[in-house]
Length: 170
Image 1 (cartoon, one colour):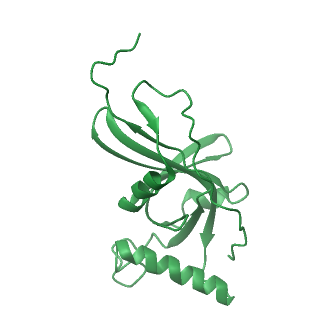
Image 2: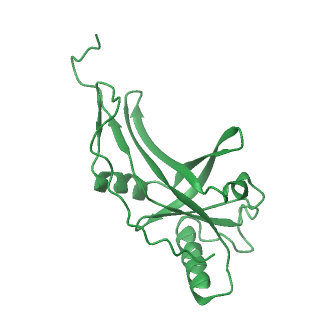
């Protein structure tokens, strides 16, 4: 699949909507840092009358989430719409956490026949092998996860929670 969408990656909103007492929005760079630091996230999507959440290993690179899953999985059903949310979080305590929710279109990658398709697929394989060098080889410990995917980072809301000493809700 060749990707021709050239829309710019949008910076996150600086307004925190319905934010709890201890939550503040992050800058884009802080959200990117969370995406770069982690390797497991969850894709959320609606298909017919059900909402599903699927965990995936991923690599973030220059405004794109590269991941892999089982080809027989539920993701094929969302190609008509392509809109997904992808969430990554970190936590150290109950009220000490950071969360990034990427919103954007999802693409399933195949080796393809054009040179650009093959280059994109090879890049995705290379990035996934940064997590697991044996990925998509004969020694892959999860060979059934043979479908590569790509999510364009179109929107990046990012939030942090850290309790404020002495703050109380009324």
